[in-house]
Image (cartoon, rainbow, N blue to C red; front, side, top):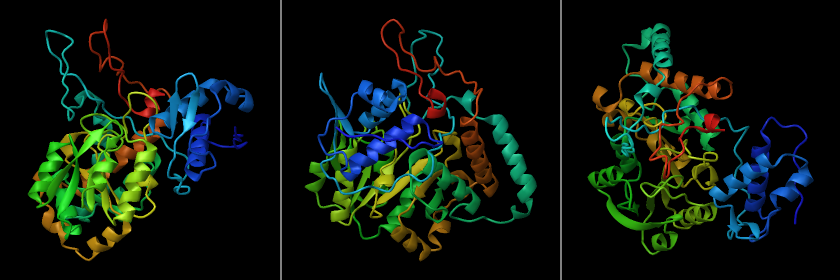
Length: 406
């Protein structure tokens, strides 16, 4: 058994303090692989706190694979590769912005039918009032820039907001200089194909997202399918293939929904480091969870600059924007700086999402406003019945951001 000491003064909620303390202790080896964790009751007595934050922290650790539950025995730490403490998430973890969950299509009959299209959002949840206000302010304050293309990498102020948002909500370690604002999947794959010139094959989850697979084919990559199990992509199968690039969705594998646990994430990172390979982490909807807290990114564990982080605003705002982003590791960012025309040549105007610096400034302000709203009170949202199937048999709980679900 081991002692857990919480700081006397901290602005973080108790469950977060417990989560980070136990997680980092497992990573560093202070809590050894296979060691039994204290029961909820014993930890409650030790710390003199309620059981709710303890249960929440344990649920987060279990969901991320740091601990496993053995029936009638308890929770046990899992870390067969104790390689040292990963970089902690800097600062208190802010809660992600409220956003639209998947919304069932409204049919007249029968009422239990729903739309399982993963790209469909609830149009009524879009923050129209804030959006209109921010676009107007952007035009009023930056009208002198209307005759310019703007920064092809994305306005610096916008990249600062995105970098801060990702650090607080997803644990992504980045600077604004590493963020590249894109105009959809095709645009981002085009950039990566130029940056990764010389790599001819990519390992890809099977089953996986066909749109991204097609983009790899269109950019000249040989796509090598790697089977997916309950713990995500098979690391053993990946090691048998001679590749230097792999595409994964570790926080919510598409379409199986599996979550890659912490030990598998460390094995994947170790594989990339040993083979000088890159990992493309597609975090397409990492902000959303049916229960518990959002799972931190794979990139936040990376200590060797092997992870290319990809995200999108299609889920938290609307797919109509056709706007996404990449967070490039330092060496790829240096390559991009030597290719200054690459970002210009890959853009195709309004139709591809490069529709104005004002829109991007508007998005940045909306993200800031929504993040701040998560820390306030009185958030009124009607999502409790948005995802429900046959209430007499089984149902999905409503999927919405952590600041509302908690």
